[in-house]
Length: 294
Image (cartoon, rainbow, N blue to C red; front, side, top):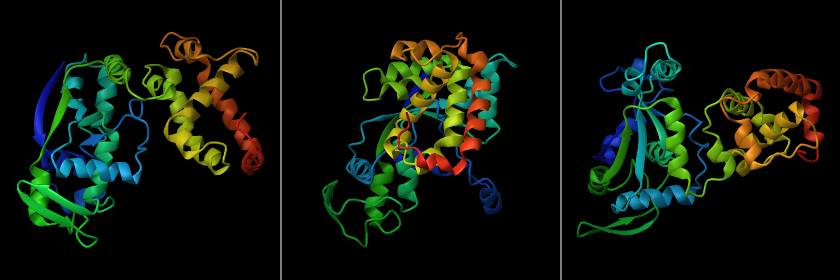
């Protein structure tokens, strides 16, 4: 179930950049790592927009051409719609305990860009903007959120965006929603399958988070391969080889079955992680001597 609504950019920006209204500065400092809106990495790749893409998005918002919808999950309502004590209830409750009230199923790059723009980390493309019958000239001295023309800022904040909010769904249904939304998009296979609802998928994703720095420092994976989850697919493949044998083919079909909730892989993935960590402890810094990830 979902509800559709239109809201101003100012309202969404408040969601994306604050914890809650009326909290003290001390509380904000203590809880600054928490947001109303956060992402479950099962549904989102790490933000991978370039600076130019971020600036183009801000440009679209300034001239009221932001036609893409934001898809969020109302964590509290979905939790309360779940049977207390169930895995679904525990899933949503864990996010609430972190101070997260909405999960971002689609639009991580846009939400991240809003946050960065509000912190002056993304600038407005220079040039003339003809908005509501008035021309506004953006120069280097007025191309940040804090320095932009006040009238133009108010226009930007008042422009509207479309938001879909899921109010009743199981964790598995969120995976189905993500897959359906992105079935025709330019996500690669690894990004699409990342939402699979299984122990194997969760553990592989967690393993990548712990290993990504050493493997990227060793130049075994490019930043693009990391951001677009090619590294996750590599770990899944290594796990499959570890479990089966070196001659087994790891096709997309096999990968999908390997990530299913009833796969035998779910029972052995924790042992694989222990073996992998022992392997990396043995290698240590010598991983930088490896010429190729295979």
